[in-house]
Amino acid sequence: MSEPSIDVDPRLLEVLVCPVTRGPLEYDRTKGELVSKGARLAYPIRDGVPIMLPEEARDLGEGE
Image 1 (cartoon, one colour):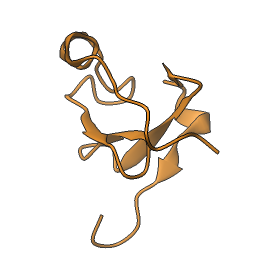
Image 2 (cartoon, rainbow, N blue to C red; image 1 turned 30 degrees about the vertical axis):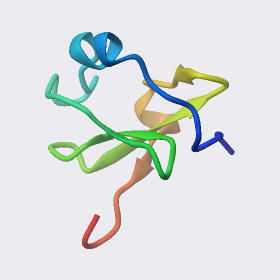
Image 3 (cartoon, rainbow, N blue to C red; image 1 turned 135 degrees about the horizontal axis):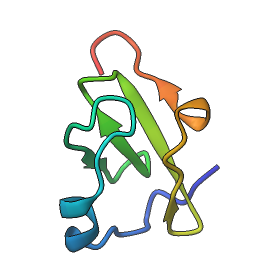
Image 4 (cartoon, one colour; image 1 turned 90 degrees about the horizontal axis):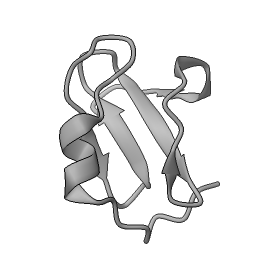
């Protein structure tokens, strides 16, 4: 499981996009994930590295 206390460089968030929708990502600091609302997926961040593989992403639940 990833460490939620890891910060993501804001410049990195500017260039990363969801590989499924090519849309923007939001950083969820409490869960240590990059969230694509369009694809309803949350990509994990492991050891400070975003894992941008759809098969590694978690499906967002209702209300997320």
